[in-house]
Length: 161
Image 1 (cartoon, helix red, strand yellow):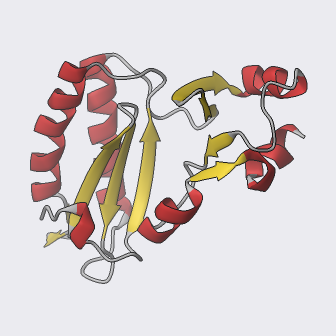
Image 2 (cartoon, rainbow, N blue to C red; image 1 turned 135 degrees about the vertical axis):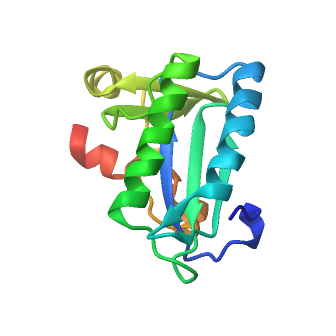
């Protein structure tokens, strides 16, 4: 069942899917048109999931499940992955590549491959204050407090440092 994100528990589980490119306005509307019905029907062992979503920066699709209501299971997670794959195909983007890195540059979200990110970091184009995105956050609380984080406090620095 769909619930607005602001009504979800801060402990709700999240999955952050990032596109390799910014979505156009029509693509964002298409995603909105598809995601709400998916969440309305999303279940785990025939039990409705209390679920929500957010589209952020025209590049991130965030799915959330309140596991205090019903826990997501392997099968329900597989359904969401299949749903994300269908969006990838429909609007011709990549959302499942966990080796893409996102950071902010002059107020815009920029995405780079791991090797590109390493190169620009070595070139000094990423400073300790550069905001990076930790798409591995696992709750709404973490999303609100640790998703956009300075490079110096991120796992990114350890990986490329």
